Image 1 (cartoon, rainbow, N blue to C red):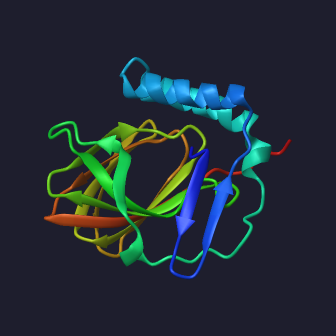
Image 2 (cartoon, helix red, strand yellow):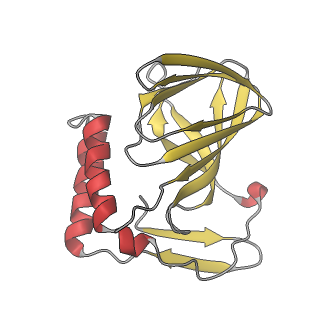
Image 3 (tube, helix red, strand yellow):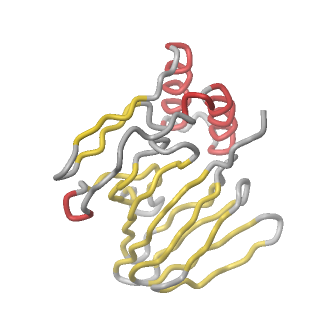
Length: 188
C-alpha cells in the first residue's frame, strides 16, 4: 500500500494522499520492515495488511480528484515487491496507476521479466490480481487446493482470486505483462 504517491504526466501534475493516523503509518512501516528482513512470512504479512486494510478502508474509498493521464514512455522503471530467488534481481515495472488512487484498485502497471526469472509462490489475502501478457511467454502456476499450470503467451489473460497461491516463470527472452489488482468492497 502506498501511503503517499505522485502521478506525473506531460499534461497534469497531481498528488494523491491517503490520510492515515500515525499509529496506522507505524503499523504499515513495521509490517514492511519485518517482511523485508525475512522475519515474517508472506502469509503473515498479508494478514497484517488485511487488518490494516480494514482499518484504512474509509481512507481508500475517497474518489479520485482528477482525470489521470500518463504515457508509458515517460513512466520510470522501478522494482516490484518480488525478487527472483535465483538471481536476487527484482522484477521491474512501470507503475501507471498508483495503489489506492482509485478506490479498491491496488494499482495498474506493466511488469517486465527476463528469461528464467521467477516470481515465487505467494497469495494476496483480499485482492484479485489480473495479468494480460503483452509480449513473450510465461508459465503461471496457481494453487487453490489443486495445482494448475497455465502456459501463457501474448494475448493471454488470467485472473487470480484472493487467497490463491500463484507464481510466474518467464520462459521467453523478455516477457511483458499488464498487472491490475482489485480489492472488492466489503459490506459494512
